[in-house]
Figure 1: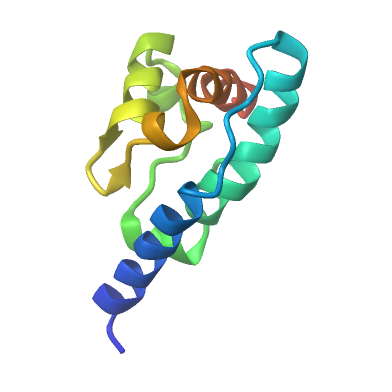
Figure 2 (figure 1 turned 90 degrees about the vertical axis):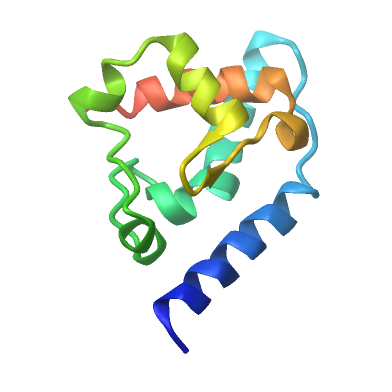
Length: 114
């Protein structure tokens, strides 16, 4: 088993799990709660619970530290584009999570700031 096989298995698992995610409610309160839960189930495996990217998958995929000045310095629109459309090895989540959940994830990423 190689790193490529492990990485592929992780990506396939993440994509498969995305099909089971339900869309968050459009109300502000539940969306914030849903963002933390969504992050935990969809993002933390690679980006880490704290956003550091210090996980086996995160290291393998060279995930950015979401707490870093580089990431936090991006506009909300830039972060939303990455979450919805994907970037490099990260898949886009707009179709599986919906626009509201993706917007809520931007706020959650902001909450990870160092």
